[in-house]
Amino acid sequence: MSIPPADQSLADGVRRGDRRALARAITLLESTRPDHRPRADALLNALLPHTGRALRLGISGVPGAGKSTFIETLGLHLIGRGQCVAVLAVDPSSSISGGSILGDKTRMERLAQQPAAYIRPSPAGGAPGGVAGHTREALLACEAAGFDLVIVETVGIGQSEATVAGMTDLFVLVQLPNAGDELQAIKRGAMELADLIVVNKADLDAAAAERARATLAGALGAFAAHSRGGRPPPVLVVSALRGDGIAEFHAAVEREAETRRSSGAFAERRRQQALAWMWDTVHAGLLADFHEHPAVRAALPALLADVAAARIAPPAAARALLDRFEH
Ligand code: GDP
Image (cartoon, rainbow, N blue to C red):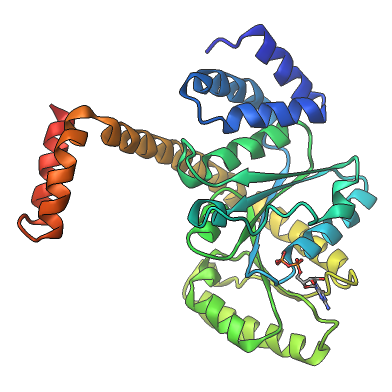
């Protein structure tokens, strides 16, 4: 795939760590204009050989759990140790309500001021690779730009947790020290996704945080007994506001990553994610073609009305549409 000279110099800028080049590259990768797509694909291919070195960390939790405070404190801690940290915020609310939960510019202000940090909201809707296509592309661009850690943040609602877990090496759930929320998280199946759990705001009530940790560790231990190879995810107590437990969290992340690297699980997860990304993109492309197909569009209103009024069985209507698409 050939890349225009201007985009090659954009790729070179990204590789040098030039933030403006990185921002422009991500804007191109996020573009929904069909005529931008071949350029975006060529750019991504040019960056690909320079990706893969960062640790990809997914972070989720309900609004107010302290995600942005936690990411800021963690980011500043790592920058203090000489690392570069990128944060991509996937905001599912932007596609659901048109509003924004994560887009608020006042979040992570201190981190945003650091030259070694890069923070960017990632639009969730309308991406070619399914919901998360753009974020995956932005993540690779950040890696090519030399970031040591790329954090993908999302609010713990809907499908966004599974989406983010599906593009990161380790998925972290930020919890409040409150039994109701723990049980909610367990019910939602977040337990299956979480590689690490953080009980935040321990400064408010240390005893409650410890109780929450023990309850979660117990539940996860029982769950891990018949899945996950018997290894429950570590549960850590932190105060993002005060910075307590952040160094321990980082050490736990490094330990988890190292265990997985040496077992091969780390590379295998990335391989599976790359394949899933390709298929997601194929499926999204087929779906878009289907909806734009003239014969499908012509038949759709009547068939929708027939299905809604129970005049035709839904699978028969679906097949009628697929027949039009295929012929
Ligand atoms: P997010 O919606 O999950 O990103 O949560 P924020 O990071 O915006 O935090 C929500 C509120 O909780 C803010 O008022 C924070 O200052 C506060 N907060 C976050 N972490 C802590 C903590 O460790 N201790 C206390 N006491 N408050 C915290």
